[in-house]
Image (tube, rainbow, N blue to C red; front, side, top):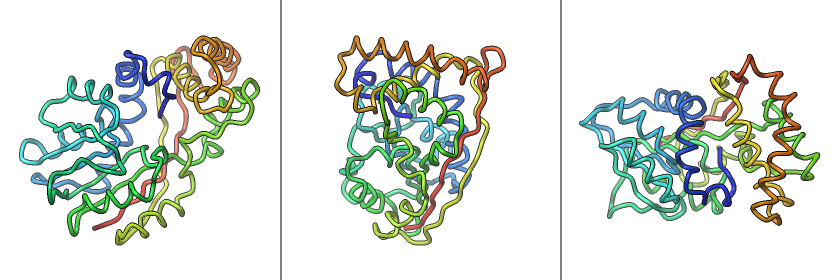
Length: 269
């Protein structure tokens, strides 16, 4: 899940992301991704667009002290949180389209969880992933399926669109796996294949997630991009209020549960 720049620039957002989203939303997929590629004790692992580093952290848990894990993200604030919650991992600031790699540096496993769909230059990012992957190494890239397949998100988007007009939600930019596979093949990867994974996601308290998701929708809308910060805050409150009936249909008390689907593409170097 990515939020708009006005939310990302708030000093508290990376802590909010780590506190409210990482455990229930991103850790389950990180574990599934790591299991898919398999890890050996001495593997070198690169997590691209790592955010606060959950996939890197899961990889480090699996390989222990013998392996080497690097997380790269463009946001220094995200990396600050990553450093505060996990030692033993090398965190680097940099762009996915120009990875900050050392001379000749390559990795046994390269992963990108829910980041590729946001990169401005996707072919360049895929080329950089290929550059980073050692011969015979394993790649894993996860991208959400279309929200047309995810009723909870689809219904929330439709509520928001009543206030904002049509929203082009970048999170689902690779909802179809075929273009993702083509992108990786064109970048020179071998044995490219994909599968669709589905999982029930549960939040003990769904209210913070609803607010963060609404902020994301406002930020991605054309109308939201022209608003002042105060106007955005006000429209977020209106949309959250109007989304209560949707939220209740997926809730049991304060707890929230919904099905979420992702593409997981794998390849070799």
